[in-house]
Image (cartoon, rainbow over all chains, first blue to last red):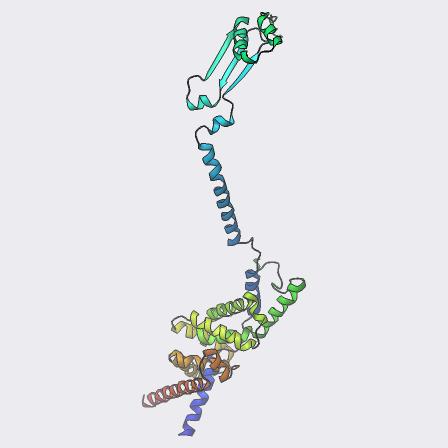
Length: 164
Length: 189
């Protein structure tokens, strides 16, 4: 019986020997080292970079939300901008003062803008309105009593000569 | 012409690092050189598929590299074999005839002098080995790798050495029985 089994054992041994081939797999070491290198790539590569960008964007958004909410609060704009800015151009022949309402215009207040055009009387009235009676000094009193005369300035006509 | 190099412009991916990193990477490369083919054969014995086996080898070395574990290994071969076996078992697909054929083809290329009849019988035996229950096939296939002792296989599988010896014996007996039956059928036919 034993003599009969020996060739069978030999067959099994041979089959087992070729069951897992012994030849080397070319380039295997290189591929392993390449995958290890890929593992060791710097943080700013691939998905890590995408993650960092996404995190930065999220942080920016979070930082911007409180500022945006503050901006959207009613009256916040008025606090930042003066209610009325007066621009005067007394040197012009027709004195012109422009009052521009900044935020009031945005909120829809009707007293938005007024344009006053006119003579010295109007200008004086404006000056009187702006003056503070309680804090007038003696010099100011004198100046206020004197009439202010605004002389009209004449501008020479402009001639346009067409050549040829 | 496209460059076959996976990392273009890099001759040696890990070894080219400078300073302390160079010796570290260098010794890791040496570890890979020492054991990669052996680990590949273990993975192939379990998965029976060359590309799956290579995946297992790569994952094995990556796991060992991560956390600098490879520096503290005392028994490199045993440790790597255990990691590879665990990963290979996880990677193992349901065995298919085409996988068996793939490995058979490789083994045939290795022994071109064999007669057609021997090859046919060998293929048939490979099929029978593949049909064994996993608990019998794994110790037998690991023993077939050739570089592993029974003690190492036992340690790898987490079994007592006696159990492994018994399973290998049972597997061989089963194969012998199959061979006898096949011969009997051939004689009758």
